Image (cartoon, rainbow, N blue to C red; front, side, top):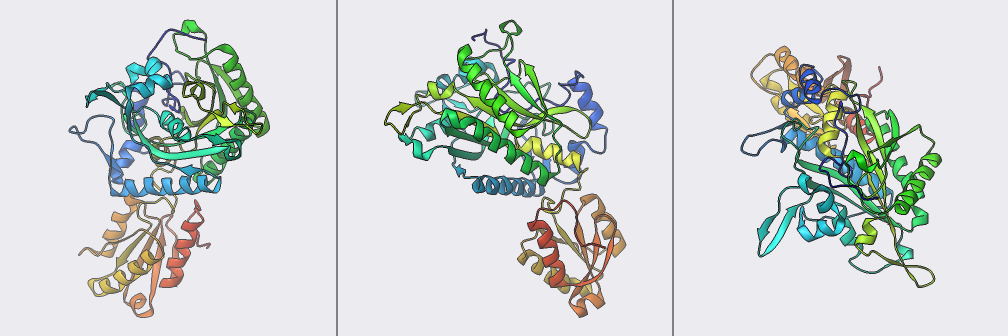
Length: 446
């Protein structure tokens, strides 16, 4: 199933750029979105989430403290989810020898989309465009037994791609990518079940994050004349496709088969979503790869003592942190769920006389594991409340003379509700419970 080399072929795990599926102009879509209050670039500036600098270059966002806090929370969530599903986490370098990507097939199929190699100590090193070759090396670090399979290896790792200048912008298309990635090495007969497990993980994460999948796309190879480059032979692709079709049938979701959207080494399930502007793109993927295990000569010892070739299931639940952040900022118009909010509690003393009491409230909230800020600037309470609104802080804790005396706070919620005065402990523990449950609402019924 070989086709001529083309730099247009999709990378593994690469999301479809918003607008592509709807046939619109990418640049026109981007300009129109930038005028919207829900555009993630505008929200990123307003909320101090990320920035860029010409000295770093286009496509390399700089996460500011508040943005880094959200990314860390997303990573914490997905790593915990994976641990509960039996994943073992690794850390691998963002570089590899050119020979590594020649072995994996990426150099032959995606060379123009990779950063050029640079010479160090007589060797050509390359910034990796994907994590899967490194994970294949982790697998083959020693001979594996069938008793170890499925072996689920996960990582939140960095990778780099030579995106064209015309499509780089904001967080949706970047050159420096942080990917929630994992690879499952299993016996071929286990691959469909592992794909189903991955789809169930995606469903669970979407439920927590409030994401609604539009449909699942079965992305298959296209005919050679379209110019995309695929590795391997037809029987390998047919086996991989059959595995994914089995998984989709077991999972029971709406499926649309699309030719020409496969990864170069195998077919994939793309979970399609619509962003806040109605543009469709891929957020999460599950892929079956029978090609790279062959290229890396991966083996396991079967029950009868023979050496057999594993299948490799690629999957990404949250996709890239950059794309996920852009999606969530727009979906929630910056008012992220309490567990993701950069600052979860803002403490406001009514006057300087309550400054010490406000700091005590903040300390108690921090002890409950919350992200807290204190605004004790020499301005009126009304002015500080108004200044807090664009920050989308879920909980404002106001400390006046009565509250300071009683050890309580007056609570204002982001949705404009006001609560009766609450003891500091009850408030801190109540917010902490909402955060711990990763609820999307603000809690505090009333």
